Length: 462
Image (cartoon, rainbow, N blue to C red; front, side):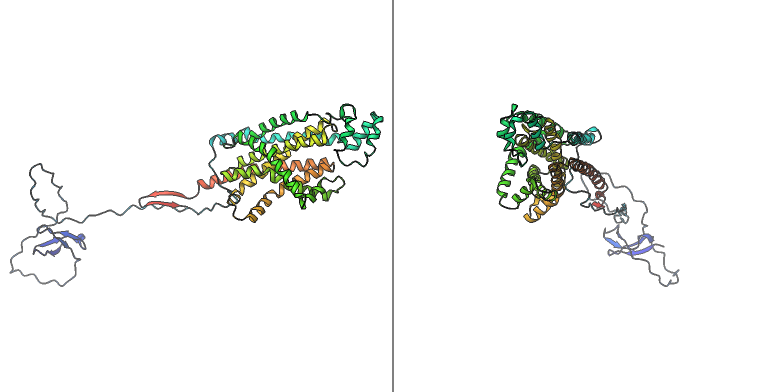
C-alpha cells in the first residue's frame, strides 16, 4: 500500500513501498523528504460522513526525458511534478582472482643476479656451439702418448749421449748425483749441436717462441668459441690472457720471492725437491704452487667483477683466457730452463697442449664459482670472510692442481691422466649445471609473483 509522507511545506505525498527508507524530492518546494518505513497501527473505522479527500499525485514509475536546451533566453525551469529518485549505482562487479601459492626463489636455484639471456645466445645454445669446449678432450692425447711411450729421465738421456760420445764422459762424472738442470749448460755447450742425444732443439735455441705464438693463436680461438656468450668480447679475453702471462706472472714471482721467508718457501722446497716423497711433494704443490698460481689466474675475473656485473659465461671464458695465458708463459719458462737441449719434441707438445688445457679448465671452473658468489665478493664487507670465501672457491682447483703436478713429478703419468679427466668432468658438470639453473630460474620467474590490474587498482598476485 502507498506510504503517505507530509512535507514541511504542508503538501502530502504518497510513495511506493519500495521507496521506504529513501529520500525523495517534493514536487512543490523541491526539498528532500524522507520516506519512512510503514508501521503497523490500528485501523480506524471509516468516516463516511466526511467528504472524500483530494487525490494526491502519484509517484510516476517512468521519468520523462530531460528538456532539450533552448537557444532562447533562459527562463526559470518549472519544478517537475514528481519525486526525483536518489542516484543509484549498481554494485561493483568484483572479479575474484585465485591466489597462487607463494614461490620463494632459493639461493641454490639462482646463485647470483640473473640477467636476461640474449636471443642469439639461446639460439646458439641449441646448436653445436654449446659443446665446443668438448674439443679440449683432444688435448689429452699428447699426455697419453708420453705415458704410453715412456718418458726417459735425465740420467737415461745422459747415458745415451755418453754411449755415442764416450770422450765427453769426464764432463758428466757427477751425473748420478745431479739433481738439477742449470748445471748442464756448460756440459751441453761441449756436445755436438749443444744438446743431448734425442733432444729436439739446442740448449740456446729460440724455437720454443714460435711454438708459443702458435699455441697462443690456437688457444685464443678455442677459448673465444668455447661456449656462447653475448658479453665476452675477444678483446677482453685477449687482455685477460695477456695480463696473466705478464703482470700476473710478475706478481707471482714477487710473491714467491718475498714468501721465501715464510711458509710459502717451505712448501716450494717440498714441491721442487727431487728426493721428496709423494706426501710432502703433494703438500708442497697444493699449499705452495697450487695456491699461488690459482690465485694469480683469478685476478682478471675478480677485477672484472669489481667493475661491473658479469654472467657465468663471461666469468668462465675470462677464467679460461687467464689460464691459457698463464699456461703459455709457464711453457716458455719450462722450455728455456728444462727442455731445450735435453728433451724430445713430444714434451713440447705435451706442455703447450695438455698442460695448458689443464690450466684452462681449472681457471674456467674458478670463474663459474666466482660468478656464483659474486654478490658476497663484490661487497667486500669483511676481509676475513672474503678470504674464507675465496678459499672455499679455490680449494678443489688447488687440490687438483697439486695432485696433477705431483703425479708428473713422480712420473706417474697414469695418475696425471686421471686428474686431467677429473678436471674436465668437473668443468663440464659446472657448465651443464649453470645452464640448468638458468632454465629453472627463468621458469620460476615466469610463474612467480605478477602485477594484476583490477577495478580497484593494481595488486600483486603470488
